[in-house]
Length: 235
Image (cartoon, rainbow, N blue to C red; front, side):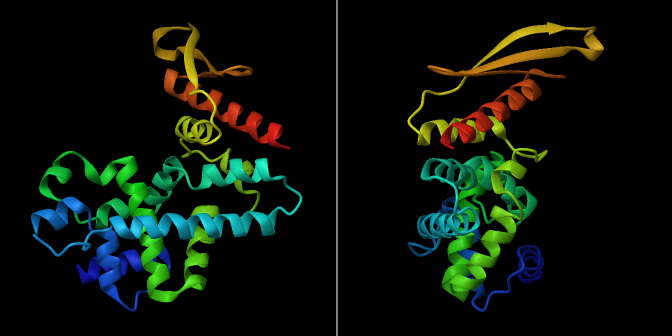
């Protein structure tokens, strides 16, 4: 375990003074239950704290980086950055799933790649860094791994690994909009090189179409367009 933790610390760019905090951040409730560990030995409470710390640091960053943006535009970008979809992508880039402590049942059911579980683990990790080293190393982690450089959402909307459909679903829910509806409009071309056109709608007036080599890729591109529309509408 110690060697593994050193690898993870190198990936995240932070060395813990209290390794127990890191271990707790990686401990799923299923593992704690199977091992009959003490209450609060899993990462659920850390997730709660990490969610709050992440929200504060993202807000702080966006207000400082984009003083000309209105609240609505900032909220959309923040909702994207703290979404389970984005945190899942972050967890994959950090290889966090490899280091999780899971119960046997959770392990067998694919817990190391589950979106919600990995997103929660990122929040728990943020809390662990905060409790171990304070706000400065936590801010550095968030800026490096979650926000990134440059024009946050604008650059993120071009990233090849972003789950635009998931981000759009969560953004719509946060903004109290109806859930996106996807429809395959057409498909053409030979079986080995088929092109699909998918339309996505968010009533009453958000609509976009996109083409792709699969229904999934076309849907992702259409969701990307709607996210950009929401950003422009927010001013």
